Length: 340
Ligand SMILES: *[C@@H]1O[C@H](CO)[C@@H](O)[C@H](O)[C@H]1NC(C)=O
Ligand SMILES: *[C@@H]1O[C@H](CO)[C@@H](O)[C@H](O)[C@H]1NC(C)=O
Ligand SMILES: *[C@@H]1O[C@H](CO)[C@@H](O)[C@H](O)[C@H]1NC(C)=O
Ligand SMILES: *[C@@H]1O[C@H](CO)[C@@H](O)[C@H](O)[C@H]1NC(C)=O
Ligand SMILES: *[C@@H]1O[C@H](CO)[C@@H](O)[C@H](O)[C@H]1NC(C)=O
Ligand SMILES: *[C@@H]1O[C@H](CO)[C@@H](O)[C@H](O)[C@H]1NC(C)=O
Ligand SMILES: *[C@@H]1O[C@H](CO)[C@@H](O)[C@H](O)[C@H]1NC(C)=O
Image 1 (tube, rainbow, N blue to C red):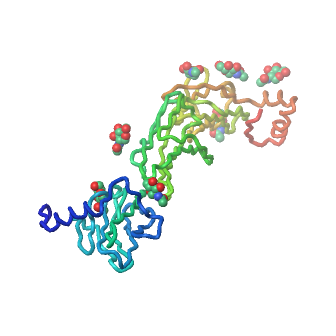
Image 2: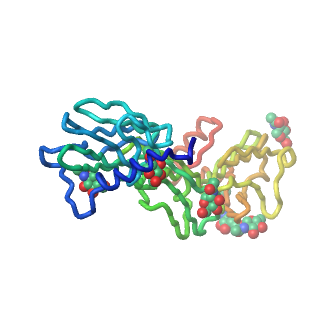
Image 3: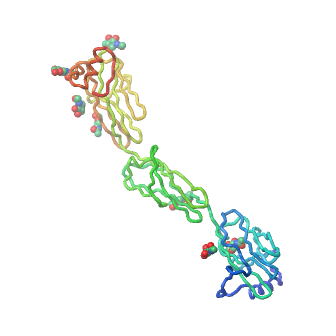
């Protein structure tokens, strides 16, 4: 029955206090050949069992293990109500108890207290409880516009306190960015988008690792266009590529008229970063200056792309870069050049 303590136990406890619990000024003799001799500090992982050993000899008449000032076990008698406390040895040479499924509250100092014919002695040891690193709270994936300020959070626990580091993964590259639980990115750029990995490490176990994906929106930037030559009656093709997040939508204009697929004897195909304007059957009036417009919710960007006729190609044959064009004309082969 918990709470009700037999009178003899009270008496015993009183005796123990008088006999064993040596005043603070008395030195702990753990270095000399005398007894008791408790082991050095014990380090265990949370959830494991800790064994507290105390060396004794035949002179010992009473022996106990205490948690701070509370008696856990006195000889063969268990005082602790905690089922995790188990006596594992009470022999002529050794008095040991086990604490099963150790938790962080068990950390602290434990005392082996003995009574010999001559005098009471104590020996202290420290139970150190380790906990593997764990990430408790990490920012969720976010999407921001270029130029915003972003703060990522990675709150971790463990014993000893884990060190937290952030790494940035963009494509195949990986870069250390911070060793703080909070990662501040002021005026974020498109290059700073990607995965941010938080790693919490201590010496107890493998680091805990989690990632946050940061998506940075930015307006389109037209990275590539191709001016192309084409013959009347043949097929022709213009292309336009734009970097943008989210992906750009493309529109093509001739002068101020927007072209649409199917009509105007053209087809517009968009794939990822690229738009292709195809002419089924080029006619004289198709030659000229086209505008490719790439847009997303953050803005738009225009570039002009030219469909050349054979006349322009012939004129260009005077320049070194036109040699290929001239050869193509000679051969009468349909070609598509992007490097005029
Ligand atoms: C030791 O004492 C602490 C503080 O009272 C307590 O939280 C813990 O559970 C005790 N551990 C054992 C094994 O008695
Ligand atoms: C045992 O642990 C205590 C508390 O952490 C520390 O003060 C003491 O130096 C340690 N003793 C040994 C032998 O490691
Ligand atoms: C994580 O921390 C943030 C800010 O401190 C808090 O608002 C949020 O509720 C926490 N999330 C969890 C799952 O604890
Ligand atoms: C291309 O257009 C011309 C005149 O518009 C026509 O005569 C010719 O048959 C067309 N060619 C093809 C392959 O459709
Ligand atoms: C095409 O049009 C754009 C804008 O209308 C102009 O800036 C550019 O110079 C033109 N290019 C050619 C080769 O005429
Ligand atoms: C791009 O062209 C379109 C259509 O001509 C026009 O409305 C838009 O303002 C232009 N944008 C830029 C940035 O020049
Ligand atoms: C080709 O060059 C000639 C004279 O150099 C010029 O008259 C003609 O307009 C040019 N044609 C084109 C399509 O630029």
